[in-house]
Image (cartoon, rainbow, N blue to C red):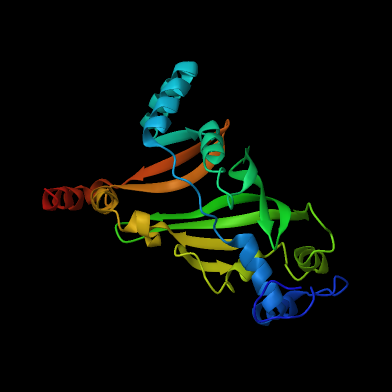
Length: 263
């Protein structure tokens, strides 16, 4: 049976194919499809890593990889700093301990973006998802931190019973893997950070996440830094995620005024 409480029907016919506007309508009005989609894209609850533990592991990593210090200094001269993808893999391992958290997370460089693979549970069935993500819009300001992401090469594989409801949704074509943003836009309970989703693009405003936007230290740092320092690009290279910055000298007076106002 479908997991949607308002629906008592069986899973959709796996031989039915939906395309274009018909697929959108199917998800918009079909409680089975909406419930399955929520199960796939809902953000899981993840444990918070210990800051002390993170600092200790960061120190150990730098001792084992002293070349990272040289790379950081070289990058600073070009207004660029890089995060080793190993650090992202470590965080993924630390955050994958919860019952609802993704499992077996794989993160790889797919220049200029990242390729991810992970296992999640949807409608009681384990699903292996893989996709590439590219940052195509970065706008950091005092009032908003917008990140535009393009999702490409999305693949979903049901690892459990192929006759399960979620397998029927995927195999029937009701979920257009080439346009994941269209289906995210129909989510009844959208994540706070999601401000737009269409075709293969998703736009987030990180300041709409209460833990970030409601943090006074983050707000003050943005008021001071945003007038003079922005983000030009986010790209992967040599197993690093590089943040390319841009300087705006004309914003120095505004930054000084913001710093004085916060004293």
